[in-house]
Length: 291
Image (cartoon, rainbow, N blue to C red):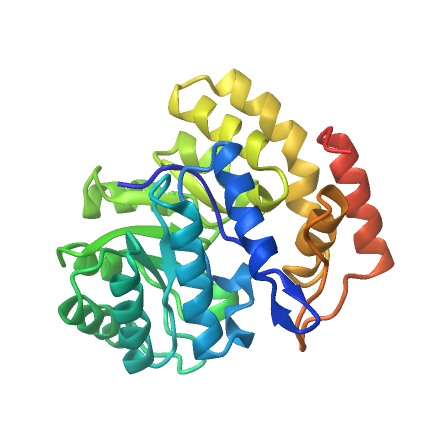
């Protein structure tokens, strides 16, 4: 259903407000450079600091700016099941192709609770759901056995896996089926992830290197792992540098260096990346041939 390079979009801010003009430019730039789908209002989009009105406006903007050229996977996750239902209801009405739903965070539900959360969402909407497993942020971890149960629900169509456990790809293929959409949530593991059976990446790096990330994913899809390895080597320092300080600080810094329509502005509690982080980003952009 979804594959290739799928940026988890930053949310541009200017003077404390969502910069709608810059966001539209970002969407156009991503599509023009080969991104295969778009994810607004994920973690990289600072969704935790968006009001409901802003969250829904960003989803609406993304869908309007994409104008059917690529599908939009709207960030709809919450640690409150009822809020996630509300987000999905809006995303469905706005025309999103799917919802990206992170495992419930902070509450720390057990595996039955995780399953019940997704089951309730699946029963509340027919919008396809891509589960997002990122234990480093949520503490909870969607175990393969739980994902196998979830995959039996007709609207749970895939996973963004940021567990860092590459062995799970084979486990998921066996238990969820080869048609279940497996997307990496870690840019630095995307090469190995695709080699093991993944079909793409929901990417941070694609915010600043959309063309290279799209070319990398295309090479993987064509089975040209020689070319993919060359591109991965070109991108790898950037993958690391964009997480050399709290994300998305380094990513917004990088984007502001590359285009004149973006700022590096963040919302508290996020603060600008350190001097060391900025230097790492500068070096990585040069290594990738972007500056």
